[in-house]
Length: 75
Image 1 (cartoon, rainbow, N blue to C red):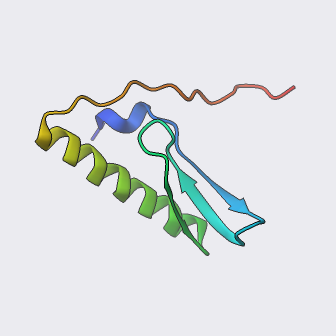
Image 2 (cartoon, rainbow, N blue to C red):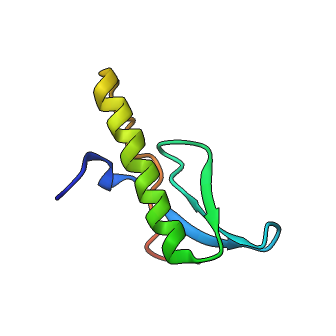
């Protein structure tokens, strides 16, 4: 099932400073989720995004447009 938030870029990356994986979706919220297993972090991030979307839908607030675009090439 396609969700309205599917257009928003999300990523999970290792943080040397924190020694955990960090999951973020900057278009939707500034915070993130973290943990030792990247798969679990990705699932937790999606769950957080789903809760965030439901909160916006139930309160009648519009979702922000997608601003972060993944790069196709790195110079």
